[in-house]
Length: 175
Image (cartoon, rainbow, N blue to C red):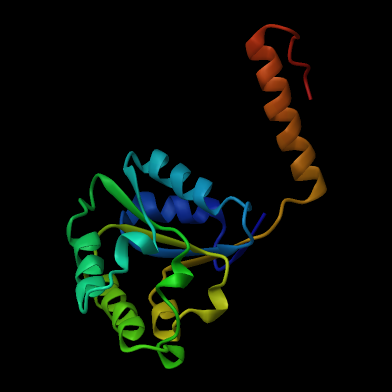
C-alpha cells in the first residue's frame, strides 16, 4: 500500500532502464520499506548493502563525514544497491542541527548523491524532518502505508496456504 510520486512498478521499470537513482521510502514500522528495497535489489540482480547510523556516526571529529564518503565510494554501482535504514538519524534538516557535525553529515550526503552512479535507497519513519535540499535530490519518494484489510487477508492466505501446501498437509485451494 504505497503513495508517492510513483508506483512500485514504475520505480522498478525506471531502475531497470537507468540503473541509477536515489529513493526515499517513508512510513510506519512494518510497512515493507526494507522488504521492497530487498526486492528491488533482487530484481536488478544486485547485492543489497545495508547501512545504519551506527555505521556512519563516530565520536571522532570529521570521521562521520569520512564514513559517509567511504560508504558511497566503496560501492560498486553495477553490482550493489546501497540501503540506509533509519535514515532520519543522519539526514535531518541542517537548520535544526544542534551540532556542527549533524549538518556536516547531511552536507556530505548531498555531495555524494550528486555523483553516485548507483541506486541509493533510504528508509525512514520520520521523513518530515529531512533536509529540504536532500529531499529534492530523491528521484522517487514513496510513502508506505499499512496494508488494507483485503491486502492483509490476501497476504495471510498466500503465506499460510503456501506453507501448508509446501508441508504436504493440505492441497492449496484455488482462490
